[in-house]
Length: 189
Image (cartoon, rainbow, N blue to C red; front, top):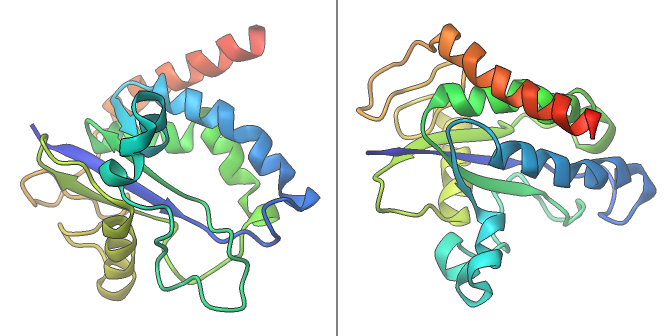
């Protein structure tokens, strides 16, 4: 069975340790936990250090790779994530509901507004692991060519067979309820 890869990329407005960016960093643990508890979540690059730190870069690729949009003279801090999902609806629900949606609502406070995509998605066979370099290349491909089966976004998604996909709103809502439930549980704790 194929897995959906999601690569996200952004350029911080200030250096990583600047007080303006602290709110972004403060939310990261909640966002990661929310992802890991989301229906349809498979794995993320930041988890590999828990399993085998020595294999982290080999399994997911070096952290030193960024898309060409990170030009010289800009802040070198460019957060990027790489995660695996069962389907498009699951990652859509995670992205636009719960903790991650709250972070998205504040992105203009932390990130440079660019003309590049903030994320790219694509499918891989179940026995493969994506790399950050591949994520950077596919993000550039999406920017240069628009959505294709090779690199797409939620506005024009594709299925694992490379066919145009219409998102299943009922499935998104069911997945979103899991995300919202986790958020309510966290707020009650």
